[in-house]
Length: 185
Image 1 (cartoon, rainbow, N blue to C red):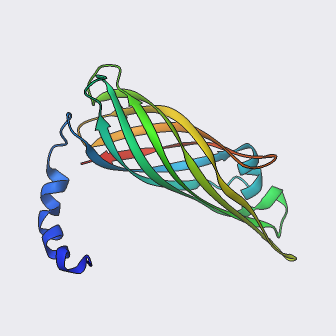
Image 2: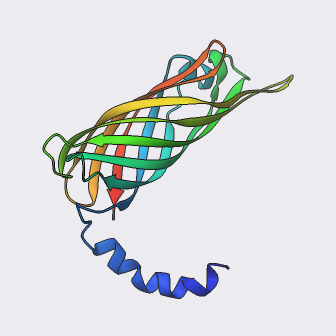
Image 3: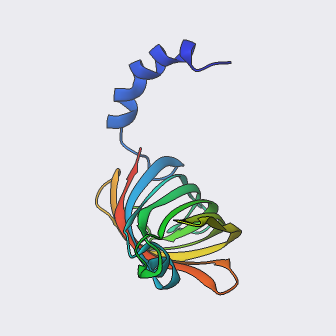
């Protein structure tokens, strides 16, 4: 089945989906966009170029554990070309994708206000360095751990900041911090 026959119906209900209140006792779809600053090996590999992280998730409040939600998520990260290891003529581009599970704790037992989050997932790294002698590629699928804080202003909008860690290869670790917005509907 293609999406084309469903497109008019989807466009017709989109305003309702976007303006409706997100219920605090049921699952909500969401997406996030973060600006990401690389640290350590990741910063050295791409000359410190900041990146962009875009993800989608479903936030599911757990009835048995008030204040706790889980978020199955998919996330994509991109860091533009930068001078690899500070050497002119070497440029490195970084792509990553992650599938994981995030646990969110709302200490005031409400989906609004401050929260803590921690995630674990499978991160696929693709790091390509280009120079005059050809391309060098490293990467693979590795563990990703991250954690951070957020503040949900209303039923739709939250501000988040987090740190992440993931091994890429022996001797190469991807670390960094990110901050941005999450939007739920």
